[in-house]
Image (cartoon, rainbow, N blue to C red):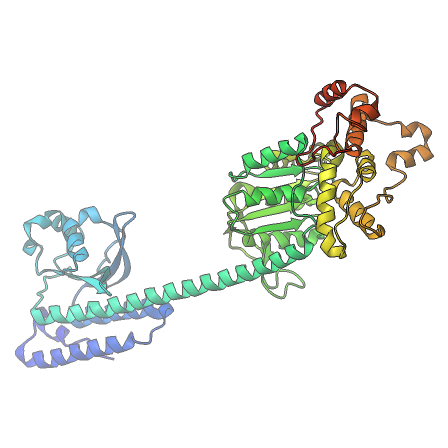
Length: 549
């Protein structure tokens, strides 16, 4: 420890000749000791080392206080970061408005020191600074910029309050060295902090990428057997128009529809047409997870958050950051989690289970359900505020019975797609098979159609697909067996007529005129048939040209 008393033994703060050599040697030793002490200091211990160094310098030089500060460019202030003052001397207050020290601010930012044995020595352009320093009780000062790697990190001020203090050239040279020691230590800590933050960001990014890869692998395994929207019916066209309208926005979308209608395909189509298409599309099936695990799945958890939480897990909202999160079967979400989901939708904020830090996620949410959420809000099983937040842009996917014009196209699509899976040659679908498919009511919608096509291909030995696996009794027929009054067809006359015309047109290959045409089979004039088709909204599917007899 360097003895801080040589200058104190010299009255008036002066150094007599007999003390000069000893004082110079002691100060050089002090600088060497300070420089060595900062070499291996960890970033967390740097503030304490700087504070101790300021104390030693003030005592050694007989000063009153020493201060280190940094710039706050946002608020145009100087903020004191380290300070030490003699007993009875008030430290410099913090923050200091830069407007009160325009001359000193300019000097420091230019990398120039400012020295004044008395305030009157300051130049005329420092009149504002002189008044501000006088209010602080300053009699003498030496201000040095803290510069490292061609950057000005802040400033160091050495000052006297009780009496004036001279700043000879040798002392100024040594104080420059002191400022350099502080600047290098602060720059090293800044770099170490930046490196740690970069490493932490890399770790977080790696964890997120690993989670994304795991989720994507699940999506590949769990992806439905069809991945394209097929059809040309007016009902499907209306849905696709809605997709095109909402996709470029970040609005929340609620996809409604019966099981098997392709709600997941609509969600995928929205994501692929959005500005988030390059980011992940993540799915969570709210009906497939126990209520106790859904919260962890959505928001993640910390190690030890609950029994079995042996490692930290990133939730799907974090994985989907910048992308899209699809919440399948949102109607199955427990009430206690609906409030947390509402908060994320409104503010983008959430907490992992077992953590106190609030996280943010920029995620677009698409929810889907086959349940009547409005009825659920009325009976209290679904929060009304969450329902209104989700249904910013509702899209209802029509059931297959309302888009029977698409059955022929869907059948051809599935036949072609399933050929490789079943190792079958090209297979023809005869008119009578299409007619049977069109006449069926399809309670399982498109998913049931795909299953029927696959089963028919397996059971058809040749190159022609035979459809003889349709259920012989529908739900209405089974109800009739139990109660004859329950079996009445609930369709309107127009719906029955429409389905019948569709079936006949499919059998006839959409021929309206000529031998064996649909009008002839229906027993009406071709012009009358065209008029009925127009009225009922029946349009021949694109690509389905009339076949020659």
